[in-house]
Length: 415
Image (cartoon, rainbow, N blue to C red; front, top):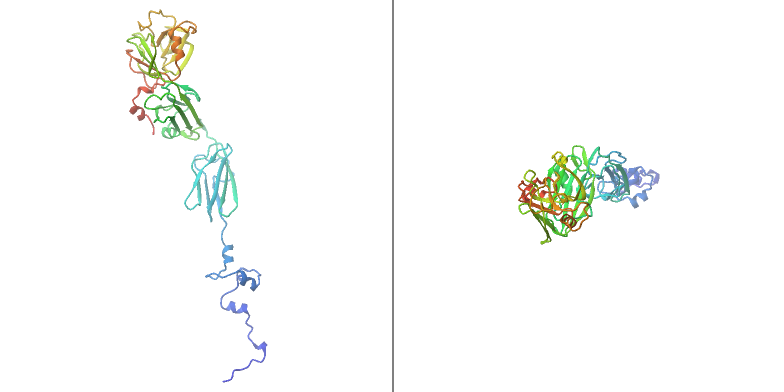
């Protein structure tokens, strides 16, 4: 059969390339997006995906990363009891830095997906912080916040002083200005370390006193470091610590003096060898001297002693007691005595409870026992009293925790 001839081009159907594609349900990318780019431009740059969308369209629909910082930007009284947190949506974190106006920085860690960063500790109170964060492939962003100040605070006054040199019996003793209810939190914030290393344990004598010591006396020459990290630690409800510091002191030579009130002598041992032996007098039968291990906690070339301050009425008031060294908070001293006859020392216990050595008025005679012992001593030296007729001193009465066994000492730790 013959095929009809189309003699006139105008009689052909008006199917354009665009119309054919439309009929097939497919349009160039420019038409889908409402752009006015030419068909040639679409064909050259917009390859189609399996869903019929172009790669250019898919990229345009990807969301930009969004950072969120807690506490929020501009917060004026942010809590200091929670960590700082930075999160990102639609991306991953590449860098986070948190800096305080006090020069401190907050370290932190990322989760496995790198979408959340959390500070390893809480921010300090009363501090302005700048948070600088960056998501992968995005610009760096910065926010600021300021933490509120605590309403009530406490500090710990410590013995010995920073940079001092003490005897082998010196504990680290901390007295708090407010009663501590959360002993665990406070003790965790305080560490005492020694060089050469030795185990050091804390013991609570009360809600306001925490002492640290090793099992045995410190070794001569030891370096001891007290680290206080009490800032913003809640010691009691709404009461926060303020200190963050390190304190170092040293142990000098070893001096341990043993007072035998039966023999009425004091033997001084220096680094394991006998250094001196002095005749002494101790408390009489009505005013016996505490027995036990005591540590020199204060030293005075001269001081006033009044009987009324230790509950003995008006029995004595001596304004210039020479070479006095405190052994207990309650008033026991080892001191020079110029008012008693020289025949008393080494023969009779005649004091009101102190340990006395022959001395001279004015505290300047270097030939007498009181002067010599004072000059050979330092804070933290150990004085052991035995055969006094009195019971062992309370470990909390002065710096005298050595009277507790190691087991009993450790039992007083909150950790």
